[in-house]
Length: 625
Image (cartoon, rainbow, N blue to C red; front, side, top):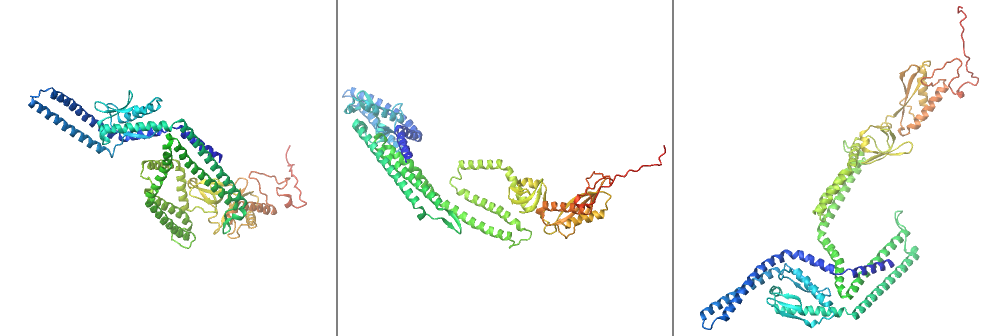
């Protein structure tokens, strides 16, 4: 609660030191820009009319002078002068009528510039220029002069009066001309010049009088006291709300076991009692914050209304919140037809996609068979069809989105498209490769495969990557583009039907008959678990080297995912069978002299009385000396 009070005090301080003059100036600037063209064109026409009026006034003065200087017997000449004066007066009426018509045409489109009083209120509006001063400059100068008069401690308000000038009526205070009322000003207000001058004079006098009265020391102290009272009351309400919040929270915590229960459905708990308590605490905190903000929003206009210079701030604050809110409501109301169209498109497409999914699910479960379309293609194809349907739905919805035809929306769309195209080239390549792999069907989930140097079981296959678990429980992620660009070996695809051939090689010297080696290798294979008896194992002699013969044992197994164990057991049995039959498995380039050398067969397989043979030395006695 203390943080809200600090925020409340900071807002008051900032708003109090920020003068309303800036807001007024911005309003005037906006009005100036909106009316500049209209008032400028009007001023040009007015200048032309004013030149004609001045010329007529000079000529009228000359005629009146000539008329007074004539003798009483010059009746003919006097009649001519009177006729000329009448013509000038008729032209003056036509001129005034034309000026009034032009002003009437501008009333609904052009707005003037306000004269601001001491209390920051609008006293009246200036529409026309005088001499070189524009309406805006006139309004600004008049506002400054009124404030200068207010700041004059020796001002006698009754000294402000109207004085007739040559072509205008001036509102003066001593030697200071506050403003001049021209014929054009009177036409804008549809009054004569004297009445309008008196009206403006009374308005200025009343504004200065009320400002001096409102800004007296007693009134200032009273307003400060009211502000303090409002702040204290607001703080007290804040305090009450904070106390009430804490009590309500403690009450909920104490009765948690009674009021709150686990929210479950079919043995699945959506929210536990503790989670519900957390949600309730969060909602209470949000509600408390909303009340605090509402209280601040109510309190600030009350404080602003106490001081005269800030009374307009209350309306400004209200409009600051209400205008966007009103705009949002208006936009939502106007957007409702498009929103209904979007919802209709969405729900129609949603149920259509459900129907398509049902069809592909039936194909995947092999309940529905389509010639040439494999069941494992069903779900990947459904993913593609679903993406295309959603893309089509987006195309239909896009024109109905708010501001979809704006340049900003189009620019952001193009920018996102460029980013997507530049940053997702490799991802798109992997997606295309994933689609190709899906329809090539080189492997499926659970198959033992080899991709490059990686051998393992397929555990996941997506549009972007393929994941393989090796026999060491390593999870290796391979991009689909790499899978498509390399060779893939599938050990499982034929294992169940025809069996996978596992093979290994041994090298035996030429001194041992090949039939005996063949039989030993086949017996070792038949002794091995997970080796099929049918088809029968077979042996290939793959090479006749300098010191040995290379034999390759081939055997069938259906356990493609257990090749490591099959090879291990097979090698063990080859060793056992060869040792039992006295067959030595020599190193490829190992040469042994049989006389005097111990056999390489393990001692467990040799007779207990086995002894290495003696070395035989033959001496040729017949050699001649």
